[in-house]
Amino acid sequence: MGTKYTIQELIVARAAKELQDREFVAIGQGIAMAAGVLARRTHAPNAVILTEAGLLGIDPFKVPLHIADPTCTRGFTYSCDMIDIFTTVLNQGYVDATFLGVGQIDRYGNMNSSYLGDPDAFTIRMTGAGGAPEFVGYAGRAILTMSGGAFVEKLDYFTSPGYLTGGNARYEAGMPAGSGPSVLITTRGVFKFDAVTKEMFLAELHPGVPLEAVREEVPWDLKVADILKTTPAPTGEELAILRSFAPDVVMGRKLQLEVVMKQVINLLTQKAG
Amino acid sequence: MEKFMDADKRMTAREAVARFVRDGDSFVFANCLYCMPLALTHELIRQGKKNLMAFQQGGIEEIDQLLLSEVIDRLVIAYNFRSGGPRIVSPLDRALKEGKVVIEEMTNHTLLSMMKAGAMGYPFLPVLPGIKVTDVVRRRGFLGDQRFAEIRDPFTGAEMLVVKGYNPDFALIHVQRADRAGNGQLWGAMINSKWAALAAKKVILSCEEIVETGVIMSSPHLTIVPAHKVCAVVECPWGAHPSEVLGHYDYDFPFRALFVGSSANPDSARAWLDEWIHAPADRQAYIDQYCRRFGKKTLDAFRAKPFKSVPADYGSTFSLDWDEEGRSRTMGMTMAEFIAMLGEKGALIDGN
Image (tube, rainbow over all chains, first blue to last red; front, side, top):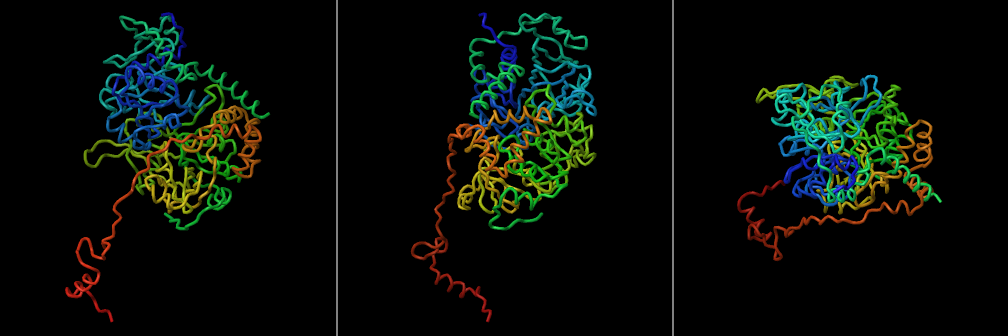
């Protein structure tokens, strides 16, 4: 094929493949929403997207700025509220999967989206927990993506439960049987979790990425699948959908900030005159 | 809880905040991300309110603006947008580091459950217990142990996690429409609005438009906050700008980006607050300033195109018990026959 793609396009296209038709999926904004919509427009047309803003059965026409924006509310099937989503939908077991972006992650898929550095003397307060702890705790499985985050031996702050200390720890702590992170897609490869120990291992390498590049990012002795696959490159169809639906996701956060701020300055100075 | 029964509670944002907000009060935002009560928020800042405690699920810019203005010193929150990305030091980062605010970290579900318990008049409410392993539950902020507790299910003996109910002194809410008495109607993303508004001891409401009570009575399913909870009604077009209000306007991304960019350092943040909060006397003046700076066309470009909901038909036969000939449909009698029957049966009392 030889079609060129951005790293975000690769991540989104790979994440979208994790969703199956007729599944309920809880999604936030950005990469996660792009993946959910891509799945619905390709192999999973009957997947039902919900957001914790109380919106179920949404069909966003462009990538939303946030979980409640008008992109999500032009036609949806069930208007409830945030408590309803977490109780009558999530706690009753209707949510098959959730997509989530990761700040920090440890070897058992536990996550931090709250503080970088010691919380009492932090360097950055990230967004905070939001709905992540419950969605990761109670959805059938969590599909994780990480494009600006980091692997760590020990989280600075424990926001969302993966497999805790591994093995059955997560289920002993009361989370639903079989739930937990199923996959982590980063800028270098795709990780899965051992069925017994629940430790993550590298399952796929992105095209052209050497194994060493992955090991450099992981502070522990990373386990690697016996047969290491290559992540499939996004197809032309996937790229066309993504570039039209979510151009700002496709270019990545850093470039987005640069391009959007330039455009904002243009708009503001133009219209002042 | 005080019941607010005035038939006409219309007033300006200035009057509402001056009359109903005291320094040191606790309050909750009864909108999150969508349809934000920013005109009311700006009035808190303009009047220099101090030492407020805020509950908010997810801040988008209002929390940062309140922190920059040193209006709040206690914050219960689950999420705060970092539009500038991880490299920028946000106003929340700065306020925490300088000790100007103390924080309590919650999740969306548990924070709103605090409000729902309070709204229901319950001391506490169960929440999903799996999160008790996380630092959100394990670490304590300024609320200490007045937040989570573990109890046993009295029926099964299973371990449960509960949150304490709260009733903030007031709520701020912006809605599409309300009547003069404050029956407020909101549609779109409902998020936290109902439970946050109902938890508060009183609700300061702003709306895009005031409508006749007849409009409310034909669409009561849209009423999210009933008049008896509402102490003030502020008619305020563009009252949520730069956030969005379905049926009225979209979010204004460039304007929002202007604030995010300005908030990155204290000097430019102060200039932003001066231009957009302190200089304009009210929301109309803010909109006038917007049109001067960016042109009315820029503002008009955000106006919503219609996407109408099919009206609910509340129709019935509307027939009285008495038919056109004055005969009861259920008894087959006229009024005279009915009264005679009551007399014959000894059901009528002679009170003289």
